[in-house]
Image 1 (spheres, helix red, strand yellow):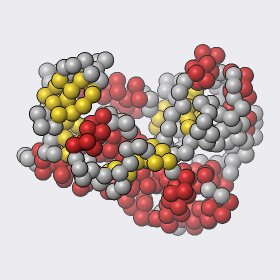
Image 2 (image 1 turned 30 degrees about the vertical axis):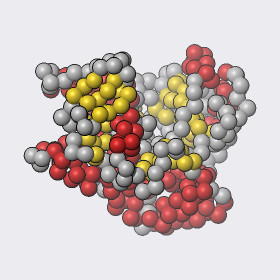
Image 3 (image 1 turned 60 degrees about the horizontal axis):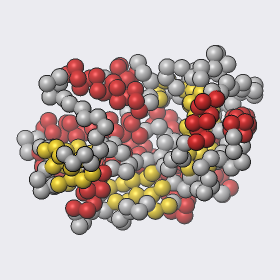
Image 4 (image 1 turned 45 degrees about the vertical axis):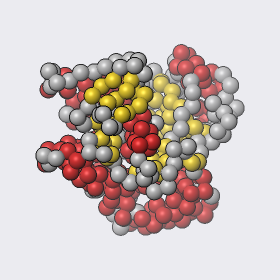
Length: 360
């Protein structure tokens, strides 16, 4: 499966591969259709409204229902399956926060050799809190832009296409901070000016689109009753900085499949799945809190820079460990526990509590 996913993913200079959700879903669908043609069925334009756990029914908005033997909720950070569990389980707990920041993405056309197709270039200034230029399959790049004024649907000072182009151009030319150099493995940004080509339709789409939030989600367990499981962002949503959202989703999906394969009893398999998956997923959720170095003051940035430098001298760099090794997330967290502890202090001050939050 990995080889098939590589076909539709964009490689980066530092080892990670970026894949669009639609391409990922298309490959997974093709794999299921070819492997289980008689057992596989997709219902399009269908939305879940509620779950009846007593009768094992998924209730749909069109008034129909679907019976299930095993229900796996992989329906994102705003999961309807998780919401139904929350109403059904009096002891349910959910640690759910928003990062105090908004984001949008902008698709760029093929830059015709003017920009390295594997380039990852950070953005700062120009109305942006942070962001970056990322490779995009099959050609071109994507601008991922973040800003911290929660009352604005676009970055500060951006009101039209011309202003957006100017803001991105300014942000791409800003000098890298010490932290950004650590993130991008100490590579210096080129001093040459980038001549970025933009698409007018995509600029309008960016300006008119709704801004998104980044979630932090941790659960005490990933199963409910005897035949319901959660995985992916429905179970462990995280920031995007380390690029591990999809990777962690595949990891927990693999854990679920292995647990179901080992156990005859579904209830036992789901309990074992939770015991294995929760510590691993919570570790990478915590590791992504390193994002909050960008939000901290000078002392926080200095402390984390010194810690990162010390770890690098010992042969351990958080970003490289995540991108280039098969080291368990728990081990990487253990190696960087002091760094993440500092970042957690910033997180606790700046986080925005989600309406669904119930303290674990």
